[in-house]
Amino acid sequence: MNDFIVRLTPSGHVDEVILASASFSMLRTGISRYRLNASSSALKNIALELWTSKKGQIKAFIENEEDWMSVSWKTDGILERLHVDKCSIHLEQMDRGFYWIGLSREDDTVNIQLTTKGYIKSKIVESNISASLKAQRFREWVRKQPQTGISLPDEACDRGSIYE
Image: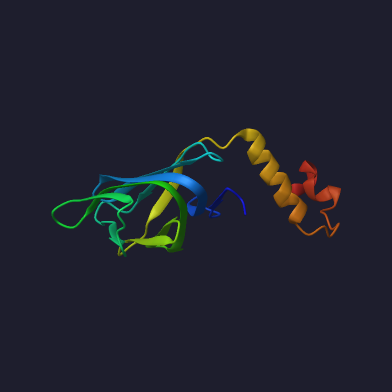
């Protein structure tokens, strides 16, 4: 298994993040916005932002809080802050308005649901994935692609014939 996986949607939103043996924190930075930070030995740091429209609100539901988690709730039941050390993290976009986060430590697993009535958008705002590691992962991905040998003819890329 890879120490970390980061997958983006074609539009650039975060589809999935998997990290082994990491620290994770989640901070509410606005009514409709959260910032997630994760770091591990394989991936020094990655910061994500999740947000919805200004009229919407992201609601967090934690299935079962464990004593190895530091969780802070506002009086109205809104998740304000969460922090966990030495855990495995799996974040995945399940639907346009639903992200799931699984935090695992030894035999314990905590499920966190982030939901809204509309959509949740996301982006990577900071990452220490080295350029050489990005290139290595890209080359691995290219090697896995089908090698059909079918290609466009040279005329298809000729500037003189493109606009005919």
